[in-house]
Image 1 (tube, helix red, strand yellow):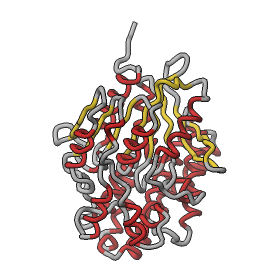
Image 2 (cartoon, helix red, strand yellow; image 1 turned 90 degrees about the horizontal axis):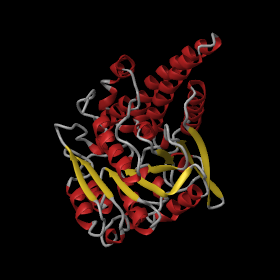
Image 3 (cartoon, one colour; image 1 turned 45 degrees about the horizontal axis):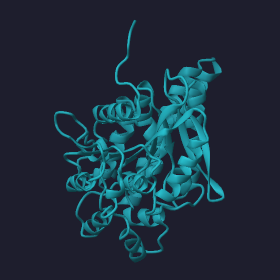
Length: 389
């Protein structure tokens, strides 16, 4: 793990995630160098300083992108806009719910991300899935070199990630190269669903996951018999739960097992384990629509997988970082051990040799992501090698 700030895990997590999303080290240095003292400050003051330096860099990149665009250099402009979007999202993610300007920053980020896709000619496109009188927003990435209906992996967020973060880390691109399409969803409690529509998280993830499958089954470019699901971090709870109660999924993957999130919350109340974001308790109340900490803990009592996983009768891959400091490794073993009816269950612990030892491999996602992509391609009928004539 790259530890720019010796005493601030949350900021180090954010910097590592930004690097995995394509940040440049020179820009990281320029943004972080003025923050050494602020990293030791309380959440509110420190986060404001973080926001200022990261948005300053984003503004500079947007200005440079405008100059490129004026000269017709659209690919260069798009590349700069994507890094600007990365830095905007990183700053927005650390802000407390209700912070002044947070929604405006998030909307600016969405616009920069969307324009970058257009300018660079990306195959990724934003779509909307009907849900509860509104919609769930998602990113669709087609497979490469596949004729006819394609296998597809639905990918869902954790507690504080977004569909764009998952896209930028790279799994959709690695899957596309292996002949598997992707649908990365901002499910209730995350991304656009939470920030712009007020759709809070729910423990019965099959409720929204089934609507996603309904939508995919109507798409001629998707092979409805080869739809899998992957979840990162808290998605390591959402995904197994959804696959257990939605039999149309052909496989499941967790990138960071989250077997008993209620236990994790109890430990955090006792100040055990690292928090993923500042203002943690107000953040989780916002995500879950709880009015106070007591009502949140009542909701959290339902967020576990005990007594559920024997329903899963499709292949399932459980992955976890050996040095995960947010979710104990024991929960990866628990998920694997309870997948008693999966015809092809596998437990993969990413260690010092493989890399990706931290929570959901945010320290090094490349090898871990490739392992997941290869497994999914093998299970859903993609490819793991390129044939040459």
